[in-house]
Image (tube, rainbow, N blue to C red):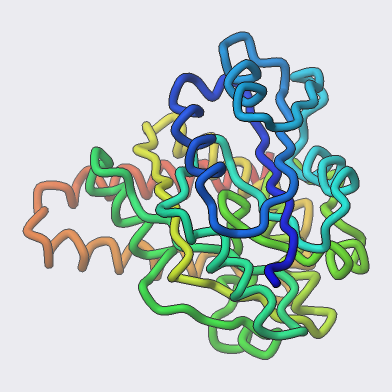
Length: 286
């Protein structure tokens, strides 16, 4: 018998594309008993779409949204042991995506969280495509605390765009951090590992999810990462500094562009990476 699963989606002006997201949720072969949408007072059709699919919708004030606090709020509202989190722009790849992710999560009692593979939408640019290729490879893996000696900060990588958690274990480590408004997934992944649990990356469970960030978006996003790392310095002290992982990304990106005959993107990639680095540093120091 398949274990019951709750799906949680956080939304704000998801647009008409949310219909396709909702349709794929309904098509899942997993035993989904409950779908909860926490909406931050959208002024488009997001809420109407969610309700038309029979999802339970709760509306919160836009200013009350916080990545950690809102996810913890949603987690406390579900009654199943397994909680699957999706973002409003993550389209499940097929009807088995959630089932595969849950199977990965439950394959080992020590696995507390699992995240799936994110593949780019067909219209994603080369830089956005590489970001998916780099962070979400074809090979699945299990992370343990000891892996930090080799993988560094990447050991605690996890994405709530498509992730499954064992609620009891998540509550055991304190749940999602209510004071964190960016990186709540990395925060709990690190806490799991530090407490003797494992996290898993399941490449067989896939969603379409990608972005073509503008320079301003790159700056703002990495400024938030810098703020997060400054606020949670213990993360870097235990798992390693972010600069090393950043350098690996830059070098891998260059090789990817050359291998795929995208030489003309090298200057563009360089500018994006400089902006990301500046954003990170400004977030850290200011």
